[in-house]
Length: 190
Image 1 (cartoon, rainbow, N blue to C red):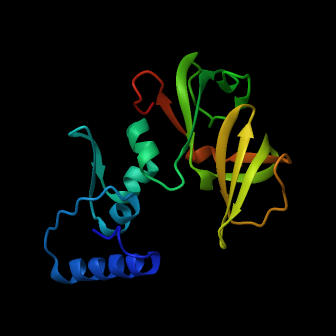
Image 2: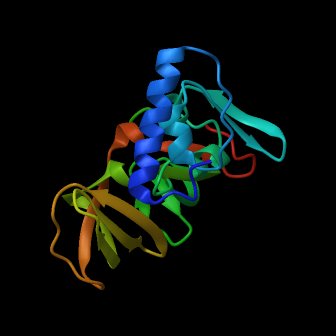
């Protein structure tokens, strides 16, 4: 319903709708394909695909613990980084041989999986994985860095300023407490 408004008016209308909903305290069903509207206006979200419920819950619950790959990709902007590979004893191995760190306590299974990490959960660190910068997009408070770790494309959303150009090597470290693992075949959370 707000898609035809300019950006500033869209934010104002979302705030006004939220304020009205809080004041009236009545159940409202709001249908949207805009995840920002869903996240900011809802007390509960139902994510649907092809007429089926994929997951329902509070907005931040869906964001923090997506039940499957569809929800992981749908909720969040920019979208969650999803990297295919195998869970091994030494970490998560991509098809091009890159080893990504996993939190302690993971079970090595040689299982085909998908490693998910949100862009804001990657940060610069000398101990991080080497990443080649592709594009840098400053947005003001944040900087989006589009990079490749091996052949795997990733987006990092950084709050700190970065002086890098396309082709430069930076090092990105994932927040190990924020990693998501999904079964590659079924798409479900492990």
